Amino acid sequence: MSGMLYLCATPIGNLDDITFRVVETLKSVDVIAAEDTRNSLKLLNHFQIKTPMTSYHEYNRVEKAHYLIGMMQEGKDVALITDAGTPAISDPGETLVSFCHEAGIRVTSLPGAAACITGLTLSGLSTR
Image (tube, rainbow, N blue to C red):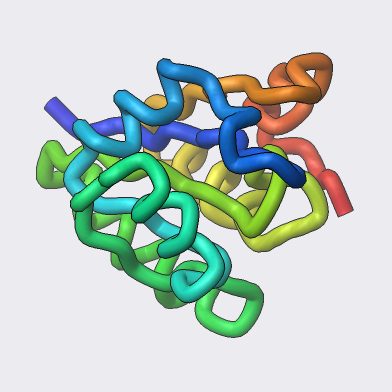
């Protein structure tokens, strides 16, 4: 069975504005794909999350999406985080979600402070 992509909403300001579910998911997945690993390291350190991280940004979004899909096809779970807010809204996460839909990989969104956008990010529709 293939792994899954988790779109994990991160705090927009205060690091404590994160759900318990997101923290637990970030601790349990095989890898975290982060828009800016330097920025995301602050969040991971704050919650003592030791999960390996890989960069996923505008300049490697296609190549890295294929790499991450390969991981998920091997059964690994991937969490996608952005610098602040919900992944796949005006960031390269949109590409990864679209590729996952094409590959038949399950995608779920773990909402944060702006839960109303969960449906949009799951759709694979353009968010640019």
